[in-house]
Length: 157
Image (tube, rainbow, N blue to C red; front, side):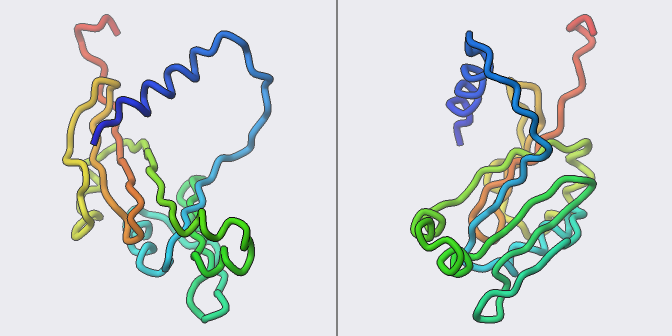
């Protein structure tokens, strides 16, 4: 998997010559649209997240779930729930999946929680200073777990 285009795009956005107006934001939370929420929850629970809210769908399965760990939040909404709540966006939501970049303190400490989880990017060190491991949740979303590399003793820090 080549992450260079995404990194280059982020770098070019950050280097824009005109200053954007400062817009205070309180929080940025991903909402992942999936066929079924229930199979996705065990991974997040294994990573230390707790379920904050669950909303049943019309068929009795989960239509929405919000999970939290130390102020970090991820939400899931089922395709059926989107069809019922936001029909104009249902087709787009049904065809989407997401890539998440999650910075962690200790990648090795998380590895036991990943037993049985599909690894899509083997552990590697990147040119932008992270040790990463890419996994896939039960809905097909890719989650990159990334630990910053320690500064080199030769870089003057």
